[in-house]
Length: 467
Figure 1 (tube, rainbow, N blue to C red):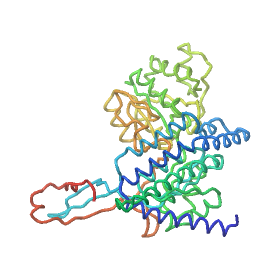
Figure 2: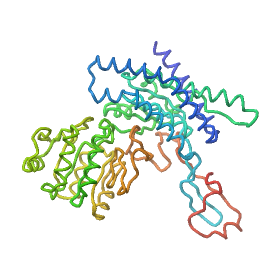
Figure 3: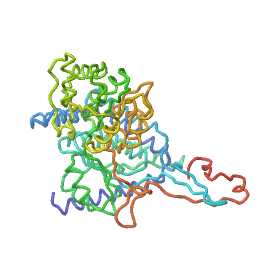
Figure 4: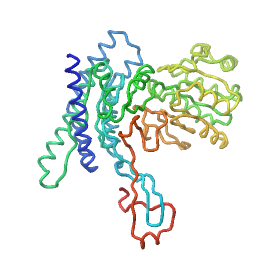
């Protein structure tokens, strides 16, 4: 396809997405949930087609001798397909985010200010390797009334095309059904153009220049990909490149909790961006059953431990077999292994642990295991990461001691990008005045009699909870 034809096609994609976004902004939650149900049905109906396409991609990746972690990311068959559908169901069950009042403040007698969640508009998501992410991202976009332009990695081209085709078929079915019942209930439907796919690298380059047509770009992939996008577009970008995450075992860490959290954080899904790559160990635990027990469970699970001198010597003194333990290099503490390898480092206290995390991690997700409230306060206050977990596994374990949301049910799920780039108060913005908004302020002047009756500085929410 010539560059002019590609440009024309992409212009059409962006225009269709903009019209879809405008339509979705006027739909109620029921219409969007109906669309999600129709998408799920089509994904189930076309499961054999999607799994066959996935087999083609995996065969090509195997022939090209791609790494084992990448092959695992490509897989969407069997249980992973079931999990993909289950996550779509989770999104559908979430309360409607559109129009929700996030904050209400009384500015003056009879004048209330509301911060209200609203759609961004047209969102482009560029991702690599994970075709199941297409379903999850599409579900989130539909739920939040945003139009979506997807660009997946070439290694998953067949799978992505089959998945998006099924999604569009589901939206078209819901749209047709809505058309038949429109006269009865006056409702509408999510347009099939609400989710679209672009395939070529040239189209990505053109997409980066669509300031004013695309409101937000979310890249998910390598450092090179994210940096290239940030440096070559005027469109707002939210994205992260690495998932170098750490678990810190404090001096008061409970042994059973430490075993569970560390094992799950490393082995539950080691290719995930919030899987733990580094284990930080308080020096007082070197001769304790806690460190020996954690190390034994990790090695038994097939994890290779890249230990510093002190942690390695402690394991040798405890009589643990040398297999599965190697010496770490400084570079290992800045590496996203993406597999069953974990770097281990001994630290003096929580202060040194936080310093190491802030200087070596990707500021994505980090956890502490401790029974000391002072350590909890220091860790959660000073770790500069998007997600901070206390006595809980960032990769998805739950326990009675959990004091942070489980990662499988938290709003920032592991399959989507988490971003720690600073955002303005009204959300991502371009370099000019026009652009996307993910929040809006709504001031309401109320009747004097009503305003005098409520003198609290925090304004009450509207009766329906929305503006």
